[in-house]
Length: 201
Image (cartoon, rainbow, N blue to C red; front, side, top):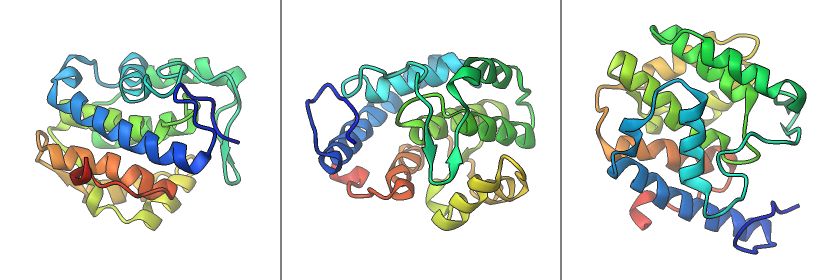
């Protein structure tokens, strides 16, 4: 089934391609405009603002908490009935150390608060927290796809793997646009649609 969208696209493959291209362009605008600098790292409001900015021209639900249950493979994300409470608890989690930040990231990924586009939005959100607290961001190009997916799948039970993988990929290049965009480039790679590179836009 293709998600209902503002573009009137009914083919899921076509929608994935168009969504990717638009969200990447919007991600570049988000970075270059300085909009990210006005967001408070670690809050759900900042995550919702990021999601809305990336997807508002595609989906009516951009920036809105989902109202349906979703799953990926055998993994079920937070049930709708507990989602708002989960988000409130995540917001209260500390974020002053690397371990605390990744624990918060893992919990927000389990919550998966939006109908679509969670990975891209949450990765930008994670980098905002890392940038504020540690003066670091993740260079996603140095994160192995399979290792990342396996570690994220196991992270709700055991987060030591994802902490190790992302720690190896930390960089001091916190204001580098190419580094920032790797999280967007890799998002479709992780989800199986990787077609556009940032340089193609």
